Length: 60
Image (tube, rainbow, N blue to C red):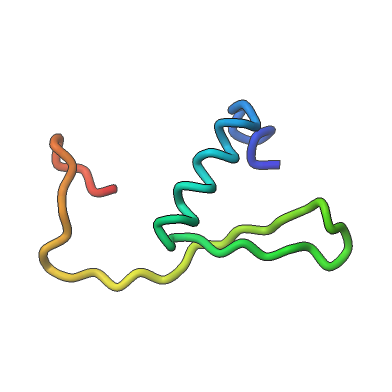
């Protein structure tokens, strides 16, 4: 569903989700109804005052 909503290729979405999961920013939860379906949710992140900024000043 993420791929359809964002119009991104499925491979790109899988890659991005893998990176986010590896960075411990999201949680993956299997669907109870359909084992082929995974649900993703953002984890809470505590911010410190020294968060690194991207070169153009936007936070990642």
